Image (cartoon, rainbow, N blue to C red; front, side):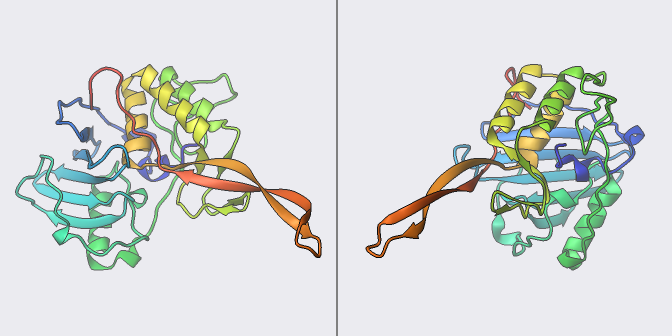
Length: 276
């Protein structure tokens, strides 16, 4: 369920100590602050260059003790820059691609455990030296207070929810989507090479609406991460008519239908009241 959480919740549930802080941001920016159990503070900005075409990029600032680190990801969530002690640390910066490294498809935000300051710094160090050395660590962890929001679930049955029931019910419904394609799985002739499961767009639309209507801190956290930070795509499936047998004159004698999968970028998650 919701495979984007595989990298994010890679520490024990008891270590989760996130606090969502609402900020008043300029138009075209979304911000999220996470207070980690190890004393680190992670600030995430999604800079929207054009909400209509989802041409955005991601800025993550990590502050732990005296250490300051900034990571920048492009619109495909590939890591492009790691910088220590930037001058404008703690504030949204302007896009400057002059310092970006060439994109590496092997290093994306999905490879980072954002619950651990040490793991964020480790990933950045590997990227700076040799991106191919980054080892992905994915463990099945469920978000605190829920039984369905994470990799797999901890529920005893389909009526079993955690104390964060509003968000949990949204995750449960998304988990039971009628169509999905797991990472590196081929279905309907489409190979999903993404590191995450992708779900039918109808289910993602319902998931987005459910989380926005819930409006709890946990729902905000899930929606912001899934749609804005990790940007999990969705897909639709249609049938295409094709000729499988023709006459000598070239006219079609027999038709068949094949499934065609089309992949789309996700919608943008936003609060119904206020902003993050």
